[in-house]
Image 1: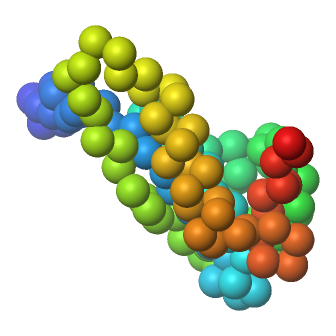
Image 2: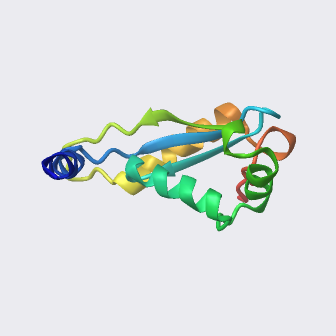
Length: 118
């Protein structure tokens, strides 16, 4: 039982890291690029894909078609937080995600993202 407490404490002490990740379909090469304010939520995302509740219909369809083993979830970049009074984590995270979207262009036959309007 002490091991469980130990693991719980370790989990709580792990710093919360924000950044950009990708979900890659290793069968057809398509990728989904997303960002999160806490990488720990990626386990929840995986659970949602397993449960069939992810809003991205194409990604969800392929997850069920190919199975979880066909996909990999990777961290592309961790957000470097600044101890600056004017640092806006949400904005910085959006900029980082946009950088990766421009770089990877995960749209149409290349990925699961929808091009941003504007």
